[in-house]
Amino acid sequence: MYVLGIESSCDETAAAVVTADQATGSRAILANTIYSQTEEHRPFGGVVPEIAARAHLEKIDIVVGKALEDANLDLSQIDVVAATCGPGLIGGVIVGATFAKTISMSTGIPFIAINHIAAHALSIRLTEDVNFPYLLLLASGGHCQLCLVRNVDNFEVIGKTIDDSVGESFDKVAKLLGYGYPGGPIIEKMSEEGDDASFQLPRPLCQRGSCDFSFSGLKTAVRIATEKCRTEQDKINLGASFQRTVTGVLSYKMEQAIIFSRRSGANPTAAVIAGGVAANRPIRIALQSVCDRHELRFCAPPTAICTDNGAMIAWMGVEKARIQQFSNIRFRPRPRWPLDEL
Ligand code: KG4
Ligand code: ZN
Image (cartoon, rainbow, N blue to C red; front, side, top):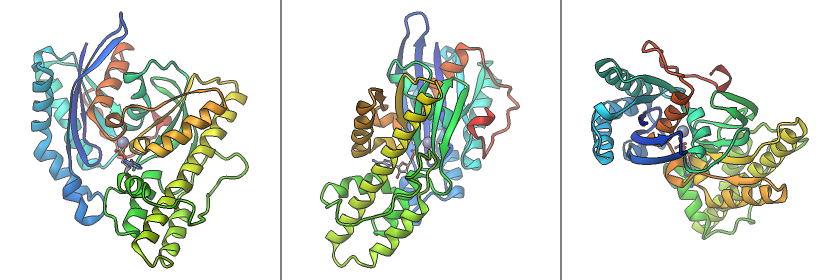
């Protein structure tokens, strides 16, 4: 089976072709094309929805064409076209969804509407053999939640943020420190030169076994601490201390989720991190050691699959096509689409 996947819910216009053979279990990414809008949004320190929608519109046909060319396929060889239909910035979502529906209507190729969060959650199964149920920490710019992935369309949310997402807090702290956008990769790089124990920052909601997250208090603490920064090195130390604190929070939450899921009898086969923040090496290393302590397998997708991409959308298309879950062409793109409304 060849599946074309289209992603346009935030600031990447992406398309990919994934092939999968259910009989042998083999699967491969034949093309994974991404046009990142980072440069367009950088002057504003964050994603501007109208700029994003226009950029998707300008690039969508080029990106999809390039994916087919890289895969050395033409549309007549594609079995399914899958596109992110939410949640996300609605202008961009409409561009990708409409493009996919148009392909479907003009060629007869079945269409599948993909939930972007669910696609992050299942992306690990594209590159690793991970069976259901597994624990997932989704840590991206738009989302921060812990869930038990029971099946392709069955996600039990066991904790979520009550304010900012982790990625958002990286971006806001980078902005406070004057580092630019996107914040996560910059803070990770700068932290290599910093003393991560020089600032003591709060670890919100890290008591009493809660699996919910809160990052706005931590961000405020960083803002107050910037007033104590006299040198460039002080700022680097503050960024490193922030990253260490976030790493501690995510480790604590993962540990609580492992304990909670085992107590409730779920018995997860693995713990997985997905989303843009999963690209962060110190966070991966810390989560690996939590899982080692609890004798649970830990997995993270390759970094190219962590941040937004078309391959994870195409892969979810494969998973849904296998269980015959095709979508109606009238499916309406959804700016909000929580996992419990799948
Ligand atoms: O999954 P993603 O590409 O888009 C959303 O669906 O939101 O995640 C983007 C987020 C941004 O906030 C970015 O700062 C963060 O992921 N991020 C990182 C790293 N790379 C990207 N955060 C921490 N460390 C990184 N290396
Ligand atoms: Zn995402």
